[in-house]
Image 1 (cartoon, helix red, strand yellow):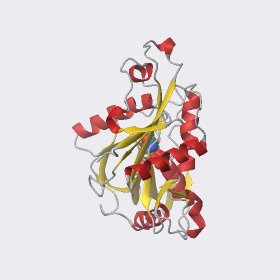
Image 2 (tube, helix red, strand yellow; image 1 turned 135 degrees about the vertical axis):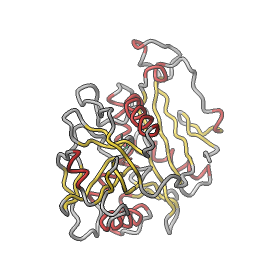
Image 3 (spheres, protein in one colour; image 1 turned 90 degrees about the vertical axis):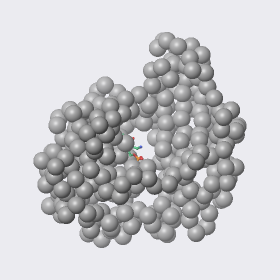
Image 4 (cartoon, helix red, strand yellow; image 1 turned 120 degrees about the horizontal axis):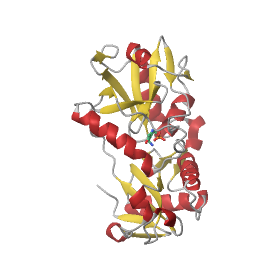
Length: 299
Ligand code: PMP
């Protein structure tokens, strides 16, 4: 279910009144910056997970598109907290988006007034507990065609095509290769594998550097499990003992099969399960030493 209220350019409105004109350049050319953030119930009150990092990336993406930053960290943090309270929600997904909202279609008109909106959704896990994926014929966007570190609407044409193609072939998601033929990421998630006992994830450069990916690298209490970033070939991925996808929406989702190849014994492996449990604790505020990851709504 959607939250009943949306924060729109500084005020909270009923869901159906938070609108924009269809003749805006962002809709026509995919020129919008957005984020996907989660909030979870904790033993104190609802808390937003890594809000500061998400807002930093939001500002970065807006800046890449030449959008003025009219609201700062403090302003948007307050907006998100107010919205959660107003919607009386305790857990869910937060979607901020910034777009050029003037009624002036034409690429040269992509500028002018920038609107910002924040919506909330309930987030009940749906879909399988383990994924069957394939290596997509669509490549991840080349780092010299755009800024791959930004979370920009237009980038998702690429992953929409990859995901649509995966679905038609009965896979749950697609793994995209980079322009050098190395593993990049999934449609809207990063990827890790356990290869010869090492926890490995692709280097930055072609991927969206996910906040969940960073969280996994920084998770406390994982003992000997330490992640390294390096190039991963498709053959290495297929030989891995464990593979999982990660992102704000997916959290940590094990991959059981890549095309015809079963990964491990087809069930979530021990390192994946350990990380899932540590991640669950992190988002629910159960690590005293990682409280700075949480923004408590009622603080
Ligand atoms: N890659 C892409 C293309 C994504 O859309 C996402 C989801 N934002 C991710 C990776 C994972 O990023 P995060 O962990 O910040 O949600």
